[in-house]
Length: 381
Image 1 (cartoon, rainbow, N blue to C red):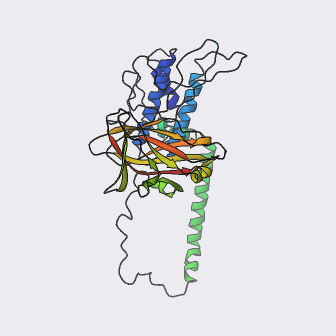
Image 2 (image 1 turned 30 degrees about the vertical axis):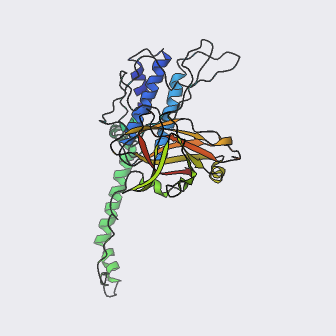
Image 3 (image 1 turned 120 degrees about the vertical axis):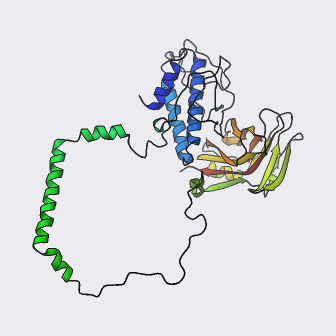
């Protein structure tokens, strides 16, 4: 049993595992714990983060199938875990972090949670779960490298290395010792017969002076040897620009919402503020961009931060016309400029028209604003 499955099953043992609503809260807690663990490792790339979420999705599907009855001849009914289950207190995940992840996403409204007696339900697990902490639930510790997979691919476990060392066959040890002895005898024989001395005497050319550098010493530019910043590895990706504050003409704000181009130390940005009705500000996604994404797996990146002193939660919805949508995403946005990612698998269709990405600057409708520096997309290989 791997670390992910063990953590989820241990949490289920602390409650009623037969209650589907309880199981869903455990699954959501597992996603939130993974998200915080990945944030604690800033060197993790987008590809690795997506791979870890897919791994948990597959493990949850496998566990969930054990609790549900068989499918009748009428065919299976597929349901997805409810995004807003209203049962008892939601499970909480503690992984040793004092602060929640700055970027926590949630899928849109889900299906009602139910266990029909004559159906077999296989969960469709969302990519990013809604809450960084869910109070009142069994704790799941996924901060270890084995649970997140962040460091497990770098080096094998120390105990496993010791076990493999003890299992080294005696035949291999004997062959190694014999080979080293033969090499030693050969070197000794070569020294005694003067082979190395003769070889040295063949080089009669005058010794060459060591190479030197004339002129001023080379000094690398500032920051040339500095460690890479979080997300810097993704700069090599082939990004397609969707929105830039230098061209705000492709932004639509309803009557009770605001959108204003401003500038700070990080450069120009568009400050958006949703109205009291919770209306969102829409960013155009050109038809030409959608044509490039048709039939591809794409990753969208929203670069943003909250207004000074006012952390907020934003929600993101997409309308790509014939190519579908991205579901509803929800992120906690803090004071630091950060990247908020989500991926979409587009069908192989002609889009027919442009699309939109709608951003609500304050999910709680308290009038908070958010600064949008850029929206971009890249195609996964």
